[in-house]
Length: 395
Image (cartoon, rainbow, N blue to C red):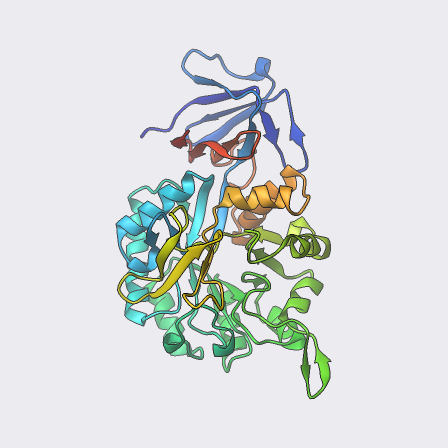
């Protein structure tokens, strides 16, 4: 499909610090052409003019942490899985993402890395901004739904070999307290990869040291990490308190209303402000699918899970097994459950993730930026997604 010339007229435009009315948004050649009053826009003869009165015009959402959706998991290691998951998330406003792996067989992970590049070249419905490796360098005690048999300590030979073979990795989640964990963070930074603290038993001081060693992102805050706890009868602050205390940390939150209840959503915003929060789905293949049995990870080596009550659970229901959320659901929840203005919720789903990745050409409605635009109705459900100047979904 060719890049389109689209004039979105009459909508409520979501800018960084407000919602503006009386502005139209024009996209052309894959870029935001103009955001201006009608009189300042180009002649309409060769443009699609869309009357979006009553709708919100939002920057596209950027998901830094997703394992799949629509019946597909990136660990399947197929182009179909990558493109199918991207198409499902595009229907919910995601215009860019970081496909995410699990702790798995090393050969399986390398296959995913190879297929990623092929799938990206095929033109997915939302942009691929690089891979996120989640594991295998985790604390076994905080493994969550990750498969313990693949979890191990970081080995420089191991991770440098993988990074050499897969230059598309942009972030990597790990437990910094493991032997070699601090060096791992430094090496990642040297290679331009973002280290993120996740599935960890780090206490407050260890998390602070990790910040000094390159880790400035927290993977799904509150999930698979300690808060304040006792050690020899004394209370010890944990990763959670460090994440909330240090301004240097940006935190991911799964705002599906299950992983974090409304009270914690409000608490995190109060502690961090919206400038240090990224909304992420952490979605598995069951996102966008009916409730019932599903598989976490690849179809051949993955684990059983079940979707119910709007979340994925382990079969024994002792823990969550990832989410089935979509980005539009997270935005709605931040407005409806966390009492955030819509422009702040959208910022956490677009501008802040772009900043984390160092993207200076997307994440906002700004002239010259990538034409990633989402239309939302009054109930904040997606009616149209424009990714890179192409309409990839229209209700």
